[in-house]
Length: 79
Image (cartoon, rainbow, N blue to C red):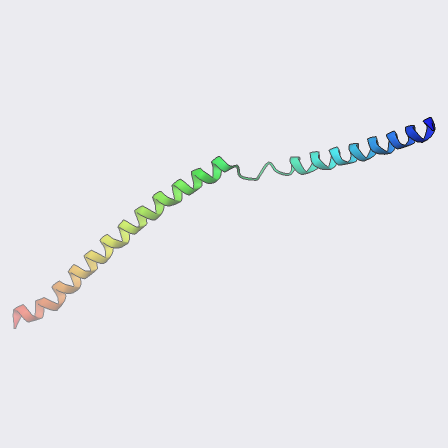
């Protein structure tokens, strides 16, 4: 009975050691994975860029509209 118990204990220890080795291998490969803080920082930066680009588009369209209006009115004023 003791021999069977020792064999079972050895099997369990081998299984646990293999599992620990697999977990260690997986954790070693996670160095490049982003954390929640990294994702939140990126999200904040993206929102700032989105806001900045939105204003640039609005300003560019306003300038283009003003130029178009000036071009359309120019011949009408000269006639």
